[in-house]
Length: 119
Image (cartoon, rainbow, N blue to C red; front, side, top):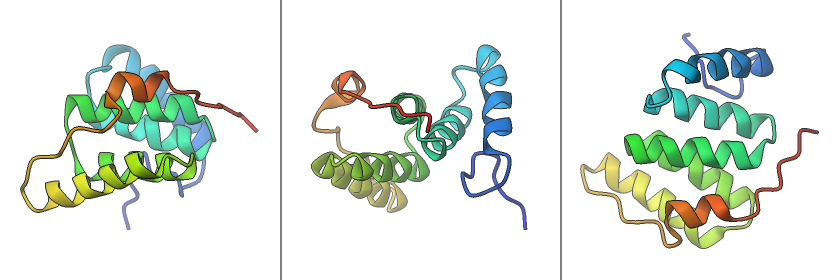
């Protein structure tokens, strides 16, 4: 079975995160790479970085996986209302519908306290 590079459940998360950081220097506008970075950062409990990469991924290309990942992150942080909008957007995209704007908007989402904790 093939495991996606950004899958946080696979081994060597920190090693893959370092590789992605290098790739990001020349491919910062790649939505899939931003999504992988967001997922890997979340698995390492780098909440602010994870949120930043997930939001950037969605700005570049809204995807079911992107909204689902951001929804899970926001849910863990107690941002239930916004997480529910993300989950609904994932469902809307899977049905071929346009996603709705997030209630706090991308910039406000990123300016909220992130509480990064490398431990």
